[in-house]
Image (cartoon, rainbow, N blue to C red):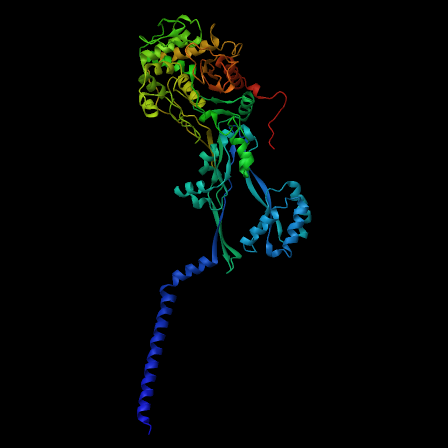
Length: 623
């Protein structure tokens, strides 16, 4: 017989337990809802906004580059791209085929385009072809109604109207690569380049990248769950990069480039008072526009394998033995150290010998120069005089003084592409060659040979220090920055001056340089004959390879790449110098016969302004 009382009791116990379980679960649910809705409200609200609101960066417009007179050297030109929104095209394959036929495009662009379509959402535009010509743009525009979803978009891209004339000054911009990203990330600048495709790679474009690039802007947009933009919520415009003005002069640079055409070498024209670089030539050069849109592998290999090495900036990276161009500086050192006086008499024979040795250091003139003082030694570039001076002063003093003239040091020019050259010393030779310094090493240094190397820019700076009586300025390409309140000029950058015991010692060296050009025996008197101004200068002929003791150098029979380098440094006018020039011509021969005429022509361009006006009306092409 069933026990109804026991069953009733069991039922109620189970009902109570179930009810309590429900209450507990409801409590857990409510507690969780409270946690999510109240405690975590801000967090989930933020996540919701992150999914709904996107911040899209906007690239700033890159600043322009002008010469000292306001001539545009680097501009931003629009390029046109043909883009298609796949979802708006009823028959994408047919549309692409017809556009390829209409615009005479490479059929291979179709495969790349369809691959890009598969990687992106169909409501996003996909580029079919970049860099359309004006004819292609016009042809598409009159047929655009036939191709739904296809549009022309314009973008700004860097363009250098003077092509290879300013390559080693301005440099170029190119697409950002992994190395650039790593550098930007290290400098905490990567966020500012979120929408930027190009960055300065060389020259002024790289050195003043922060000024030229500007500040990125952004826009906040609302998107749906598929990422489609619904509306714009906020717009912060980018801040364009600053326009900058350089010290270089277009007319002077163009004429200098023509003088250096078909030669390997470099030339620098600089103001000695403030270090302004008026022209800087490295020959041969190349067109930087090749790199802006991405240079092809064959084109890059051609530049890289070119035996004339156009990619090197010879003005600031080319290292050459300075040869006799440093003899005026050596004279100043000898005077200040008391090794010579302005009236010291020296007999220059056909060679110089270190006492108790057999090796002979020969003069460039086979029979020697006879009696001379320091003025005549500079004028005729007597090697034996400076062999003897270097022997008596020693390498330690030479290194000390010539380092103050900027040799073996970075010049401070506003370019990353610079080599310091070599101003040798005992420690340098021990570290580099694991050998002690010998007296014979010092003798060669006395005439700017041996281990001593310098750049054309360093030579120009050393002459600027000479003519300014020891005042040291750093070469400078940047003239000023165009700000909202007008031009902001750059201050003169100076180093520690060279102090001499007597200021007249400078005049001795400069007078010797005057006699090089104007003296009866001056090595450059023919090159500077009949100039309407007075100038000073010094030639140099640097051996590229060593000769045996009794071997005579013969230019005609020597292989071209082993021939002497020709050098010349100059300044004008003599009384109050306004400009200095340095010229180096690789494997050209004698400095007085080859480099001096080029230096004279460069000084003429500055001292006789009407020469900068092309009588034939010929102008540099800008297209």
